[in-house]
Image 1 (cartoon, helix red, strand yellow):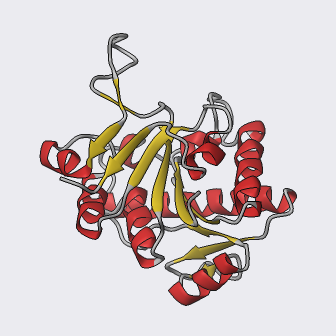
Image 2 (cartoon, rainbow, N blue to C red):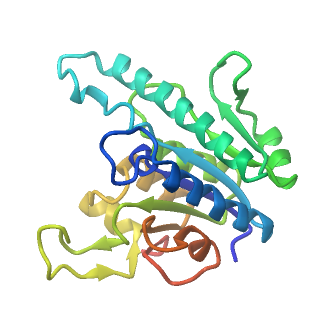
Length: 236
Protein backbone atom coordinates (compact mmCIF):
# COMPACT_ATOMS: atom_id res chain seq x y z
CA UNK A 1 0.00 0.00 0.00
CA UNK A 2 1.31 3.44 -0.91
CA UNK A 3 1.85 5.84 1.99
CA UNK A 4 1.41 9.13 0.14
CA UNK A 5 -0.17 9.62 -3.28
CA UNK A 6 -1.20 12.40 -5.64
CA UNK A 7 -4.41 11.51 -7.47
CA UNK A 8 -5.12 13.34 -10.74
CA UNK A 9 -8.74 13.47 -11.89
CA UNK A 10 -9.96 15.10 -15.07
CA UNK A 11 -12.76 17.61 -14.76
CA UNK A 12 -14.74 15.53 -17.25
CA UNK A 13 -14.56 12.59 -14.85
CA UNK A 14 -16.73 14.51 -12.39
CA UNK A 15 -19.49 14.68 -14.99
CA UNK A 16 -19.37 10.93 -15.64
CA UNK A 17 -21.02 9.93 -18.91
CA UNK A 18 -23.54 12.75 -18.79
CA UNK A 19 -23.34 15.72 -21.12
CA UNK A 20 -26.13 17.72 -19.47
CA UNK A 21 -24.45 18.39 -16.11
CA UNK A 22 -21.15 19.64 -14.73
CA UNK A 23 -21.19 17.08 -11.93
CA UNK A 24 -22.66 13.59 -11.78
CA UNK A 25 -23.36 13.36 -8.06
CA UNK A 26 -23.22 9.56 -8.02
CA UNK A 27 -19.77 9.60 -9.62
CA UNK A 28 -18.48 12.34 -7.33
CA UNK A 29 -19.73 10.61 -4.19
CA UNK A 30 -18.23 7.29 -5.29
CA UNK A 31 -14.86 9.00 -5.71
CA UNK A 32 -15.22 10.63 -2.29
CA UNK A 33 -16.20 7.30 -0.71
CA UNK A 34 -13.14 5.56 -2.16
CA UNK A 35 -10.87 8.35 -0.97
CA UNK A 36 -12.39 8.00 2.51
CA UNK A 37 -11.50 4.28 2.53
CA UNK A 38 -7.97 5.05 1.40
CA UNK A 39 -7.45 7.73 4.06
CA UNK A 40 -8.88 5.51 6.79
CA UNK A 41 -6.44 2.78 5.73
CA UNK A 42 -3.56 5.15 6.44
CA UNK A 43 -2.62 6.60 3.05
CA UNK A 44 -2.07 10.34 2.73
CA UNK A 45 -4.04 11.65 -0.24
CA UNK A 46 -3.65 14.81 -2.30
CA UNK A 47 -5.77 15.59 -5.35
CA UNK A 48 -5.38 17.56 -8.53
CA UNK A 49 -8.56 18.06 -10.56
CA UNK A 50 -8.80 19.42 -14.09
CA UNK A 51 -11.43 21.88 -15.26
CA UNK A 52 -12.64 20.28 -18.48
CA UNK A 53 -16.25 19.92 -17.34
CA UNK A 54 -16.41 23.73 -17.31
CA UNK A 55 -13.81 24.87 -19.82
CA UNK A 56 -11.72 23.34 -22.60
CA UNK A 57 -9.19 26.03 -23.40
CA UNK A 58 -9.85 27.84 -26.66
CA UNK A 59 -12.33 25.28 -27.97
CA UNK A 60 -15.14 27.82 -27.53
CA UNK A 61 -13.19 30.58 -29.28
CA UNK A 62 -10.11 29.69 -31.30
CA UNK A 63 -9.12 33.36 -31.55
CA UNK A 64 -8.96 33.82 -27.79
CA UNK A 65 -5.67 34.79 -26.18
CA UNK A 66 -4.04 31.62 -24.81
CA UNK A 67 -3.12 33.22 -21.50
CA UNK A 68 -6.68 34.37 -20.87
CA UNK A 69 -8.08 30.97 -21.83
CA UNK A 70 -5.69 29.29 -19.40
CA UNK A 71 -6.66 31.70 -16.64
CA UNK A 72 -10.30 30.69 -17.06
CA UNK A 73 -9.22 27.06 -16.90
CA UNK A 74 -7.41 27.71 -13.62
CA UNK A 75 -10.57 29.15 -12.11
CA UNK A 76 -12.54 26.15 -13.36
CA UNK A 77 -10.22 23.86 -11.37
CA UNK A 78 -10.88 25.93 -8.25
CA UNK A 79 -14.64 25.41 -8.62
CA UNK A 80 -14.12 21.67 -9.03
CA UNK A 81 -11.81 21.54 -6.03
CA UNK A 82 -14.32 23.29 -3.78
CA UNK A 83 -17.06 20.95 -4.97
CA UNK A 84 -14.95 17.86 -4.30
CA UNK A 85 -13.91 19.21 -0.89
CA UNK A 86 -17.56 19.46 0.08
CA UNK A 87 -18.25 15.95 -1.25
CA UNK A 88 -15.50 14.71 1.05
CA UNK A 89 -17.02 16.69 3.92
CA UNK A 90 -20.26 14.81 3.34
CA UNK A 91 -18.23 11.63 3.78
CA UNK A 92 -16.83 12.98 7.09
CA UNK A 93 -13.39 13.54 5.55
CA UNK A 94 -11.67 16.87 6.13
CA UNK A 95 -10.34 18.49 2.98
CA UNK A 96 -8.40 21.67 2.28
CA UNK A 97 -8.10 23.46 -1.07
CA UNK A 98 -4.75 25.09 -1.77
CA UNK A 99 -4.07 27.45 -4.66
CA UNK A 100 -0.96 29.32 -5.87
CA UNK A 101 -2.87 32.63 -5.80
CA UNK A 102 -5.32 34.16 -3.28
CA UNK A 103 -9.00 33.25 -3.71
CA UNK A 104 -10.41 35.24 -0.83
CA UNK A 105 -11.18 33.06 2.17
CA UNK A 106 -12.23 30.12 0.01
CA UNK A 107 -8.78 28.53 -0.31
CA UNK A 108 -5.37 28.52 1.32
CA UNK A 109 -2.23 29.65 -0.44
CA UNK A 110 -0.05 26.66 -1.25
CA UNK A 111 2.72 26.13 1.24
CA UNK A 112 4.61 22.85 1.29
CA UNK A 113 5.03 22.49 5.04
CA UNK A 114 1.39 23.32 5.68
CA UNK A 115 0.28 20.81 3.04
CA UNK A 116 2.38 18.12 4.71
CA UNK A 117 0.87 18.97 8.10
CA UNK A 118 -2.62 18.61 6.66
CA UNK A 119 -1.75 15.25 5.14
CA UNK A 120 -0.19 14.00 8.37
CA UNK A 121 -3.40 14.95 10.17
CA UNK A 122 -5.50 12.81 7.83
CA UNK A 123 -6.85 15.69 5.75
CA UNK A 124 -7.09 15.51 1.99
CA UNK A 125 -5.33 18.38 0.23
CA UNK A 126 -6.74 19.46 -3.12
CA UNK A 127 -4.41 21.51 -5.31
CA UNK A 128 -6.30 23.88 -7.60
CA UNK A 129 -5.38 26.77 -9.88
CA UNK A 130 -2.52 24.93 -11.53
CA UNK A 131 0.79 26.72 -11.25
CA UNK A 132 -0.93 30.08 -11.41
CA UNK A 133 0.63 30.69 -14.83
CA UNK A 134 -0.56 29.90 -18.36
CA UNK A 135 0.86 27.22 -20.66
CA UNK A 136 1.15 24.58 -17.93
CA UNK A 137 -1.28 21.68 -17.69
CA UNK A 138 -2.80 20.05 -14.63
CA UNK A 139 -0.60 17.04 -15.44
CA UNK A 140 2.41 19.25 -14.84
CA UNK A 141 1.18 20.57 -11.49
CA UNK A 142 0.47 16.97 -10.49
CA UNK A 143 4.08 16.04 -11.19
CA UNK A 144 5.44 19.14 -9.46
CA UNK A 145 3.39 18.68 -6.28
CA UNK A 146 4.26 14.99 -6.28
CA UNK A 147 7.97 15.82 -6.27
CA UNK A 148 7.59 18.59 -3.68
CA UNK A 149 5.65 16.35 -1.29
CA UNK A 150 7.78 13.28 -2.03
CA UNK A 151 4.76 11.20 -3.03
CA UNK A 152 5.24 7.49 -3.60
CA UNK A 153 3.38 7.56 -6.90
CA UNK A 154 1.22 9.71 -9.13
CA UNK A 155 -2.15 8.14 -9.90
CA UNK A 156 -3.80 9.30 -13.13
CA UNK A 157 -7.45 8.22 -13.29
CA UNK A 158 -8.56 8.12 -16.93
CA UNK A 159 -11.61 7.18 -18.98
CA UNK A 160 -9.74 4.13 -20.32
CA UNK A 161 -8.22 1.40 -18.16
CA UNK A 162 -4.60 2.04 -19.08
CA UNK A 163 -2.31 2.72 -22.03
CA UNK A 164 -2.87 0.83 -25.28
CA UNK A 165 -0.69 0.29 -28.35
CA UNK A 166 -3.49 1.83 -30.42
CA UNK A 167 -6.78 3.61 -29.84
CA UNK A 168 -9.05 0.96 -28.28
CA UNK A 169 -12.14 2.92 -29.30
CA UNK A 170 -11.33 2.56 -32.99
CA UNK A 171 -9.24 -0.63 -32.98
CA UNK A 172 -10.79 -3.60 -31.15
CA UNK A 173 -7.46 -5.43 -31.52
CA UNK A 174 -5.57 -2.80 -29.51
CA UNK A 175 -3.61 -4.35 -26.64
CA UNK A 176 -3.11 -2.84 -23.22
CA UNK A 177 0.44 -2.15 -22.10
CA UNK A 178 1.01 -3.27 -18.52
CA UNK A 179 4.41 -1.61 -17.99
CA UNK A 180 5.73 1.38 -19.92
CA UNK A 181 9.09 3.14 -19.39
CA UNK A 182 8.60 6.86 -19.04
CA UNK A 183 11.61 7.43 -21.29
CA UNK A 184 9.55 5.96 -24.16
CA UNK A 185 6.74 8.47 -23.52
CA UNK A 186 9.24 11.32 -23.76
CA UNK A 187 11.22 9.87 -26.66
CA UNK A 188 8.20 9.02 -28.81
CA UNK A 189 6.02 11.94 -27.64
CA UNK A 190 3.27 9.54 -26.67
CA UNK A 191 0.03 11.30 -25.71
CA UNK A 192 -0.27 9.50 -22.39
CA UNK A 193 0.35 12.41 -20.09
CA UNK A 194 1.50 15.94 -20.87
CA UNK A 195 5.03 15.85 -22.30
CA UNK A 196 6.33 18.48 -19.85
CA UNK A 197 4.97 16.42 -16.95
CA UNK A 198 6.47 13.23 -18.39
CA UNK A 199 9.91 14.81 -18.76
CA UNK A 200 9.72 16.14 -15.20
CA UNK A 201 8.70 12.72 -13.85
CA UNK A 202 11.59 11.12 -15.72
CA UNK A 203 14.05 13.64 -14.27
CA UNK A 204 12.66 13.23 -10.73
CA UNK A 205 12.27 9.43 -11.06
CA UNK A 206 8.60 9.68 -10.15
CA UNK A 207 6.55 6.56 -10.99
CA UNK A 208 3.10 6.96 -12.51
CA UNK A 209 0.10 4.64 -12.59
CA UNK A 210 -2.53 5.22 -15.26
CA UNK A 211 -5.79 3.38 -14.65
CA UNK A 212 -9.50 3.46 -15.43
CA UNK A 213 -11.64 5.50 -13.06
CA UNK A 214 -14.80 3.68 -14.15
CA UNK A 215 -13.55 0.30 -12.99
CA UNK A 216 -15.14 -0.77 -9.73
CA UNK A 217 -13.29 0.51 -6.66
CA UNK A 218 -10.36 1.42 -8.91
CA UNK A 219 -8.88 4.18 -6.72
CA UNK A 220 -8.78 1.95 -3.67
CA UNK A 221 -7.31 -0.93 -5.70
CA UNK A 222 -4.64 1.32 -7.22
CA UNK A 223 -3.54 2.61 -3.81
CA UNK A 224 -3.39 -0.95 -2.49
CA UNK A 225 -0.85 -1.75 -5.19
CA UNK A 226 -3.09 -4.04 -7.19
CA UNK A 227 -1.86 -4.60 -10.74
CA UNK A 228 -4.40 -2.54 -12.65
CA UNK A 229 -3.90 -0.09 -15.48
CA UNK A 230 -0.46 0.73 -16.83
CA UNK A 231 2.54 1.31 -14.58
CA UNK A 232 4.84 3.97 -16.03
CA UNK A 233 8.28 3.19 -14.69
CA UNK A 234 11.30 5.43 -14.27
CA UNK A 235 13.69 2.84 -15.66
CA UNK A 236 15.05 3.36 -19.20
